[in-house]
Length: 119
Image (cartoon, rainbow, N blue to C red; front, side, top):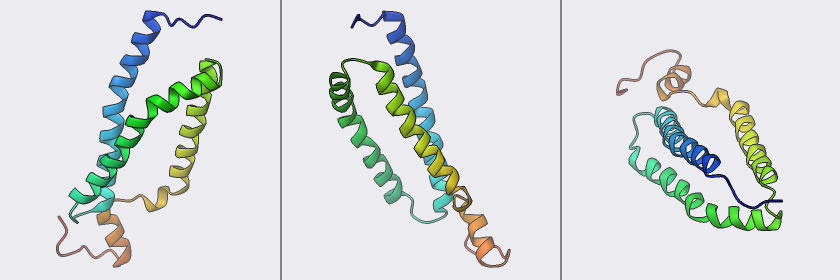
């Protein structure tokens, strides 16, 4: 068992993470903004960004502790992340009907009448 990570694997993983994080966060914030509708979104966007900062602070320490606990079996840590991602996807798919833009939600509530103050 060799604990060294080849530089090329590190660079590929770092590049994928660097590209995927901002794209994923912007997509989630865009969908969340559409679901919120024309209400004051600043508070809610601030809460979601503050909550998302917590894993970025604690995550590296937990990842290192997990790697030490599983004796540096990176496939097991990757498997744990994959399972968590799968649970998040299943939860999203289970609730996909309630994740509609605000305008569609208002139309369904008021019998296809558009809201007078809609943006």
